[in-house]
Image (tube, rainbow, N blue to C red; front, side, top):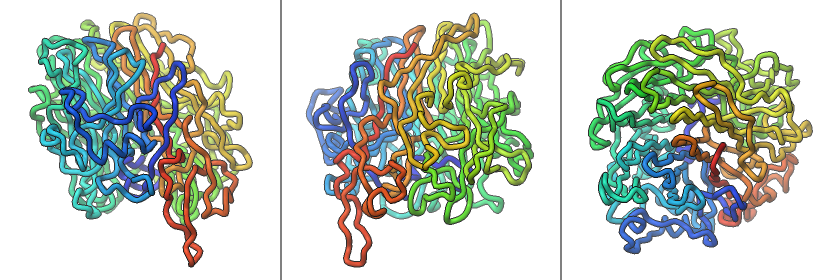
Length: 617
C-alpha cells in the first residue's frame, strides 16, 4: 500500500520482513495469551483440545519454543458463559527455526487462545489450516493462502464463535499476494445444547468470502481491514453473521482506491452472500466496523480520508445502514469530521512514510516509530430493543494541540489538497466518544473519554464494547512516556533515543448517562513500542488495533505488549550506531565482504512481542 498513506497489513509485512519473538512470565494480574515459550506450555492443536488425542507437527513444535512476535489482538467473551474467552492475533511463531532459517511453512497465521476460567489463563493454539497442518481438522479449512492476519472475533447466542481474517501469500512460493478474506467457524462439540464450557471449541470450517487478484506486491485487488459481528438479538435476524472489509485496488492510474464491502451468512457460516459494496460513491476509506442494534438493524462505520480523488476535503466518520438483516444498505452518511492524527515522516530514500527505523526504513528526522493513524471503532447494545443507538470511539488530533515539530515529522493532516500530508506539525491525540442514532443520523457531541491534556501523553488504538447498558472502552495511553512531546513521535526523546512509553488503559460507563469512569491502567509494565523487530530487525510494528469484549458488566481487553523483549545491539550499525535504543537481541556473522548474515538466534528474546490481557473496568 502507498507509503505513509495506507496502513499496510501485517501479512504484507511478512513478505518484506522476517522475524520471530521471545517470551516471558506474566505478571500477577495481567495474563499472557501467547505461550510460545517452553516454560509456559507451548502450543496445542485444536484437534487435541477437543478430542484429547495427541497431535503435533513442526509448526506447533516451533511455536512452543519460538518466543515469536504477535500483534493485532482480538478477543471475544462468550455471551452464554463469560468464563469462556477466546483471543487471537497475527501470530508469527512459525516463521523461523531456532538457527534463524525459515521454517518454510508460511509466515504468519491466526492464533487461537482459549480460556475457560474468565481469562486467568489461556491455552495457545492456531486456527487449523496453516501450512504444515496435517491434523484431522486441516481438511476442514478451505483457504487458498499461506498467511493470514487482521483477526476479528464474534459469538452468536448458540455456542458458535466466528473468526474473520484477511490472507495473502501463495503456498507455492511465488510473489503473488492473493489478498483474500475468509471466515472460520468454531462450534460446541456437544452441539448448541452442549455444556457451555465447550462453546466455540471445535473448528468446523473456514471458507473464502472474497478473493483478490493474485497480483504481486499488493497490486491489483487486495482485501484488508476486517470487521465481524453476529446478530444475538433473538429476533428475525438472530444468528446472522456479518463480515466487512476494505477493498483496495492498487493498479489504478491514480494510485490506491478503496471501498468497503460486506457479506452475510444466514446459515451459521456455512455459506456467505456475494460481496456488496456498501460505501458506494465514497472512496479512499478504511477501518470498517459493524454494529447490530437490538431490532436487528446493521450499521457499518468507516473512516473517510480527505482526498482529491474521493471529492472530500475532510477526514470523517461515515456509516451505511441496513434495516433488512444486511441484505441492502442505505447511501453513506457523513457523521463527524475530524483533524486526523496520522504520524508521517520523509524517508531518506524519498517519499512520505508512516514507519521509521534503520537502513531502508530510516527517516530524515532520525526518529524511530511504528505506524498508526486515526481509526474508528463502533458497536451497539443488542439488548436495547428501543433505540438504534451506535456507540463510536476514534482517536484524532485534539484541536488546539498543534505545534511546529521542527523536523520532517508530522502528525496533522493538511486540508490543502492535493498535498495531504503536512509535515512539520505535530499534535496530541485523544480518544473521543459519541452516540449515534443510526435511524436519524443525529449524534451527541464528541467528548474525550479521558482528557490527556490534563496530564500529558497521547492516546491511540481505541476499542469499545457495549452490552446490557454497560459501556467499556480500551486504548493505548502514553502518560508514562518521560520524553513525551507533541513535536515528536510516541516514545521518542529529543536526542532520538526511544523509551518505554505506552500502557493499556480502560474505562467504563453507562448508556443511561453516557458518562465514563476515570481511566484505569491495565498493563503492569510500560512498553517501548518502537523496538526494531521487523524488516530484518530494522523497523517497529505494533499492528493496527487493540480489542475489548464484554457481556454485561463483565469485560476483557487485550493488547500488544513488549515487556518480554530482550535488548541487543545491531552489528550492522557497529553496535547501536544511531543510539536509538531500539535494537533487539540478534546474532549475525560478518561475511568476507564486510556484509552481515541473517539473525541466527531468533529464539533468544529479541523478537518477544506478545499478547497480554486482563479484566477491565
